[in-house]
Length: 320
Length: 244
View (cartoon, rainbow over the protein chains, first blue to last red):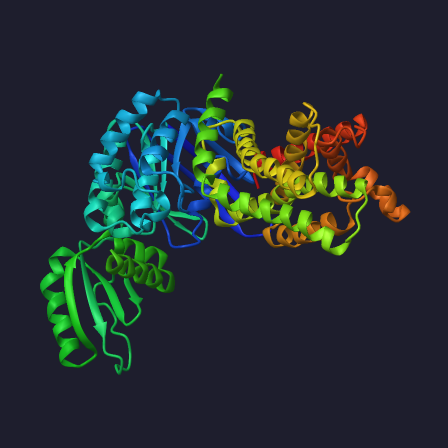
């Protein structure tokens, strides 16, 4: 494993336990997702790997070498796209990407060649020589990605890389993330966007309150839910009580909706039950579809936090 | 080798980042200098020869301090707050190269204002200055020391406190520091304080090299500045390398 994190704990001076005994590992060629709502401890984790924060306890190894003891080496082995916007006002994307490539050890011509490739792959050509101060948030985000990817480290860490990016370029970005892994980098991807993560990562860990509460491939995690389908009920606000699931599987309320896990062979039964609830006016409408990683996430992280995350996702999708 | 290469790349980076600052800084420094050179004769219509030289040579020192101890720490404080300093700290370059490059660019921003300040003073008072070649190291040392101290303040203190302290420094430098007057005019206790602080030494090396025929050049002042410069750099370097 290229990145090995063991029993990592970070307690801030304020007493906040942002990371609490986290262990995880990422291999070369792998895209590993770190999911969690805001404040779950994702950014604290990556900031420790890149040497901006010192862990309270635990170890971080990249390629077998101790990153806590060698923060300088950590910065050379890892390339990093931070959650905050990159401070490149005054520079053009061309200058910023070329300089970063050279700082990571490439010759000027190598950096230029890589930059040309990325600019084309991310369709950023029209902004190449624009002052970054005049770029939109999404374009700046893509430039920040290109800066992290121009000469990738052995480990590439991307903190919310798709924020503010338009849907078309999001796809281009995901393709480049996969290319990084295909060329041998270990990619640690931090996001709260569960839907995108499901399509893009090989494995993932769900972080809640500083702890890893689940880890595996998207398929494994969905399997753990025990339900291939998801029945979503939109509850009638005037209904007296919440319907009880007849399937003995997860039933998670999210706002005025109820998400219920349904086994594949009970699809017909589920539709009939939902129809009866609708006839009795306990629900306004329902949908039955395949279970998603989002359902796993909702089942694990639960009510209020999940609702908040979903609201963010809806907001993201609308903004995009 | 890696240090020099990183330094060169970071100077390019910071120069491009700050190129829009240059006109602003020049304007601020020019205003400071003009304010002093044109304003003092209004306050004191009859100025003796020494006072005129003190004002003409004190103005560039004040303009260097205004950048190093006020504009610079406020900028660094903003960078800390918005997270851009953390990004720069995550770059795969030695901390020493980063700090050296940033200070180099700050110096490059300050120096034109100093030259302009000296020229404005000499023109206003019709002075024939016999500038010493030592003015180059002197001005660099003054600018670097004030930048290092300003950097240290912003690196160690929270942003709001940095803003308050830098405002207090402006008043202290303008009104209560022996830059446009001689230290002997200060109350004894303040004179003692200024013998330890770097501001008086900044005034002494500036005027001692811009107008060497009028003022002596106390070598002790160079030493005082060197000590403050190293201390400021050391504190900044430690703060930049520190992991919370």
